[in-house]
Every structure is written in structure tokens, then in C-alpha cells.
Image (cartoon, rainbow, N blue to C red; front, side, top):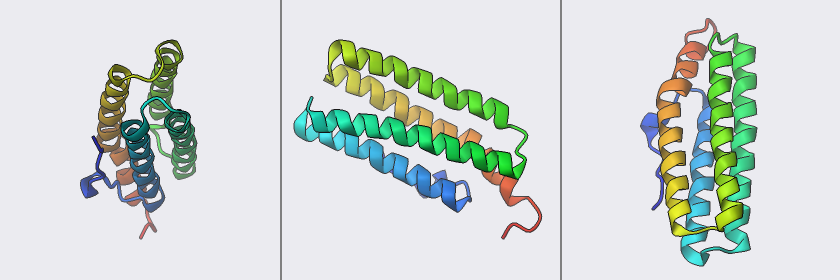
Length: 137
């Protein structure tokens, strides 16, 4: 069950759009590893990598918002933290249960809906703000 990037998810800020596409790619790598191998070290490594990449992306996005003077940064940062908190809960389940289809389905539903909703609403507002700044090409 691949999660496809769609051009309408672009927020018009190249560096963020590239990172978003990579998030989708990394998530699909995790799903593909699970579909091919099930509960293996490679699958688990893909999940840990996905989590680390998301945290790195959030830091980069927040840095860009700070540099642009984006007024919604504090609220946006809280949404990022809520995502990390939820991922940490999923990690605890992963440690307790091991990787199984029910957990992968829960992860897929959460990550997919969160990413798409977050990009469409929260991140699009960042793009609109940055692209309205004078001197932005």
C-alpha cells in the first residue's frame, strides 16, 4: 500500500517540497520492506530511519519558519511535537508487540493522514507566507 506523492501537496517552497517527497519515499521504503520481509531487522531499520528523517525535517522546517519570521511557528512546533509523541507511542507498541500487520496498519493510517493533512493545511500556510514576502521569486 504505497503512499503516493501528489503535486497538489507542493507548498511552493522547493527545499520543503523536496523534503516532503523524501518523507513519502522513506515511508514507502518502510512499507515495501515490511511487505517483502515482514518483521526483519531491515524493516525495523527503515522505521527508525523514517522517524529520524521526520525529526530532521521538522527541525529544518522550523528553522526556515524562524528565518522567514513566520508568526505561526510556536503552534506549528507544537504540531510537530504531537507527531513525535504519537510516533513514540507507536515505538512503545512496536517494542512490546513486535512488528505485525495490525501495528503496520495503525502506523500507515496515522502517518498517511497526518502527513497529508499537515502538508495541506499547516505547511501550505508556511508556503503562502514565504511566497508573499517581498523579493521572493
